[in-house]
Amino acid sequence: MATSNPGKIREIEEALGGLNWTLQALGSVPLPPETGATYEDNAALKACSAAIATNLPALADDSGLEVEALGGEPGVYSARYGNLNTDLERNVLVLDKLRRQANRRAKFVSVVILAYPDGHLETYRGELNGTLLEGPRGENGFGYDPLFVPDGDTRTLAEMTVAEKRAISHRGRALAALMDAHRDGRPARQTITIE
Ligand code: IMP
Image (cartoon, rainbow, N blue to C red; front, side, top):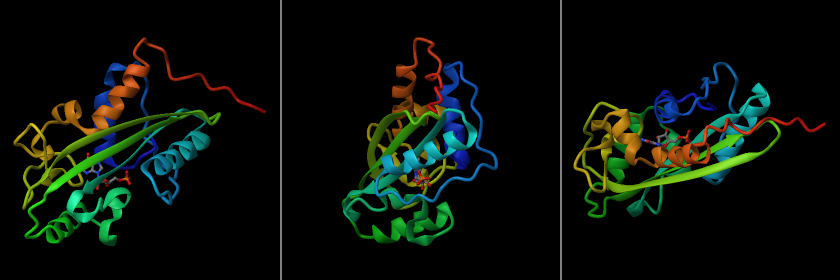
């Protein structure tokens, strides 16, 4: 798993439990800076660099929150919004920017890429629509979860269990598509080294 985000690791491990794969965290293998302009570019950067460094298939998630009233911000910059260091500070920034804003629609986007050491890529995408509260609620999850109430529910993502969040979330949907592609028990595509 080409990520150092414990929240993502927890969700990926829970979602892919049904596949007979051995999942390994990246450990000390460094990830490249996220210099891409899209989720796809950044997920490919992370997954390819980990696949090359480890010579194993590597799975990366690049994701973000897109707030309608902020023209889609923070989007691909969600992890470093406002150059702030903590989830709490970034949540406060979003709430500040939305103060007195009636339109609180937002969506989460996740692009999951499975990269193989020979350069082959599989890409999966998931989205989740919802609204942002005026203050945080819930202790679970990570990132902007305490602010986000998905359509069709009254709880925030931070008030759900990992399994409840996975069943509806952007990342859960992208990972379900990956599961479907490998459902017949096929292992991840074999690695072929091209000289
Ligand atoms: P990146 O994919 O490493 O660039 O980081 C994505 C950022 O988007 C995270 O650090 C969170 O701030 C936010 N984000 C992505 N997915 C979620 C989620 O499922 N819940 C809450 N915040 C998320």
